[in-house]
Length: 226
Image (spheres, rainbow, N blue to C red):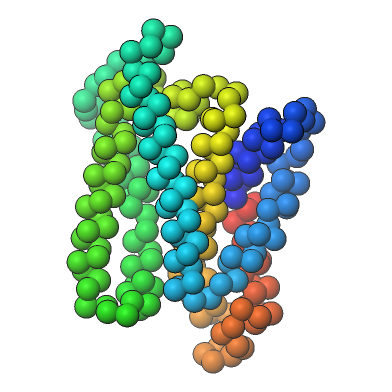
């Protein structure tokens, strides 16, 4: 939530020519009601729509960023670094990033339980992981070959796209929308497990307007924003 808020406000400043810097905490508070609303959705099948929107915005942002990098690969003003195929000292970091990239493992059981044809889950899982691996390699490898180690400690979007451009802020906005749309999906198993400890079986109403569960989820959302 902090990352989302810190990226949205520069776009707002740029489009409205505002120089005043609003505190990050205030900007987070502005977006909390939106996150509350989508976090109160309790049926996985309705979260699919949010996830689809997030995937579309993320896909557009990745395609534009990659296309821009390839078109300007030969520009002389681009700062580049050394290209090294593998370093033993970076293997722990590689595995950490790889695990983070496939962090959706926590959703496997909820998705399986929500599927109409659970017998097809293994096929869907294999196709999804294969597609994600191809997507990650297809985006990261060309970018790294162009910019090399210069990307190691600097935001990829900031390096590839023109700084302080409305296009750069717009692409960052798309990535933030993808993050916002994926938040309730990623938090779904967290809500389910936490509610299992706090509420007794069958207690309350499993609807959108169950005030106790909604308040409990709001507390979790606030906690994750700190």
